Length: 194
View 1 (cartoon, one colour):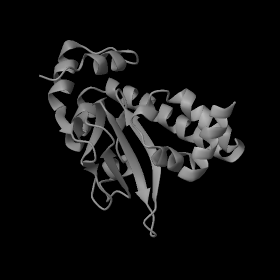
View 2 (cartoon, rainbow, N blue to C red; view 1 turned 180 degrees about the horizontal axis):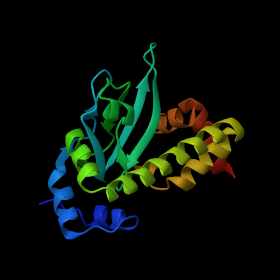
View 3 (cartoon, helix red, strand yellow; view 1 turned 90 degrees about the horizontal axis):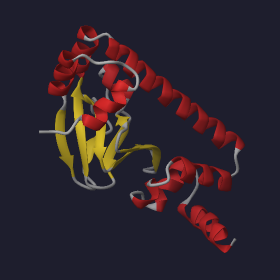
């Protein structure tokens, strides 16, 4: 039996669910245990489900033609993740997602998501709010990459995601912030010297 109380509480901040809505939604969710290092979606394949993280940490990244990985996002407990373009359009993903720590997730398959949105229209509102918030976060990240210096970007990252460094190796944080691990190490040493 999966514990969905935290997820349902999060949803109920935006919409009010009837008992039948809860039953329908929770029966659609497929629990999975993901081991550290295990892939949850891979580049070149269609993303079959939207993913909710119950515990642990996932990382989504893009691998360029030179084999360099570029971190797009991290997903921790309480977050939804997955390649939305691949999921909605049913086209191969350009991203890979893997666990940075042992993780528990809930999968919401595409067919079930479509059924949920058709049968319980208030979930349209919930996912719209979720996607709007995600878009705002990504836009803020783009502006920050244009306007903030490296130290400010790292400091903002630490404030926004205070517990993430316990899961995430520095090389991935550096990639997410757009600089090399060596440069991030310099920034961290400089901050420690203060």
